[in-house]
Image 1: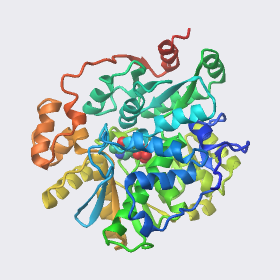
Image 2 (image 1 turned 45 degrees about the horizontal axis):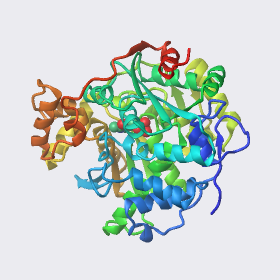
Image 3 (image 1 turned 135 degrees about the horizontal axis):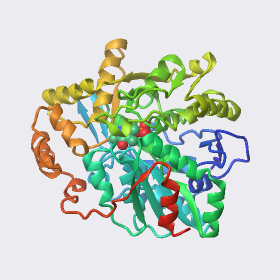
Length: 496
Ligand SMILES: *Cc1c(COP(=O)(O)O)cnc(C)c1O
């Protein structure tokens, strides 16, 4: 099989293997790793249609993680996609009101981050073994609520790793916070910061690119890596469910192999939708990728105007995992539409740091034809939950509701009748207060009673992820300023 190598979006140094890129997380120059070329799927979609999620995973991962052996990949896949998912299909699909909802929330933390973070720890320790690297891996993660818990659940008590998670102390839902601060595992550390998600993400990137710190760590037997979607080891496993969803539609005779479909993706850091774009580059018949934003609509404005501008108010919404003004993974798309140009990409990223904005050229803008865009206000989001519930009884979370609203508007505007999959990124139980409010039920009770209410309304059992919070000890109480993040990391590692 062809070896696929990875390089930085910001310079043209020698490309490295997939396993090395996964270990490093972020390139030394602050850029993100991208594949130097896109391999093509080597199965037909009629063949894919017969495969299980795990088999599909292997047939996708083997192409992009080409320096892992068959045995290594199959072992990682088997350990990741097992009965910690509460549905045998791993990513089941539900038809409602003329669209297919791809439910990516059947993992341990009931949000789509589990899809990649269930496998990333195994890919990472396998990578360390392959590269004869015996330093302890320290995962540093900034979270807008869902990545943190999914990464904690994935890395807790994994030998050879430690994990530190920073979350905006007032920027996550009550269930999200409770999930994180009750996390077990001696190798885990969870810290609230006085700031928003962008502050957390900027702080983590700063720690990553601090060369003195890296040297200090190495001499103490540690190395940093990232579980954020800047790690290519997050993006590659996310390609799998796009292929799986497509194949499932073929398998159920809803489309013929080769027919095009659309995906609508509720978007924040641009990782999920970028994986769909990569799937398309590899040959998945996708027509439109519809990027759905909440009121923090930087990406909507970018796709409309070609100008990215983060200089605006940061709005806390009912879809907190999309409350982001600096979408890290957009850098990868910028690099690709600039003709795989590291020099152009770095100059845009420099502008973003210095002035908070940049404008792409007309030629680059012409390459965005794969995408369409929309956004939902808070009212739009609540109505999208309510109308779907009233019409069908199916209950969706606010992130998925943003996508549903944008989808309805898109169809109204374009008349596009292409079969469409709406990517459902979280269980409604994770955001139960907003969901109950939207469907007109009372919300003045504690988290766990609200879960019972929602269970009755939706006719769905309360997920284990929520039940297990009952009576769980609070283990992480630390709060720090956004300038104290590095000190807290050193303290946790016992380095002065
Ligand atoms: C992280 C997240 C998103 C946004 O995904 P990106 O890859 O950051 O664009 C959307 N919905 C939920 C529930 C999430 O956890």
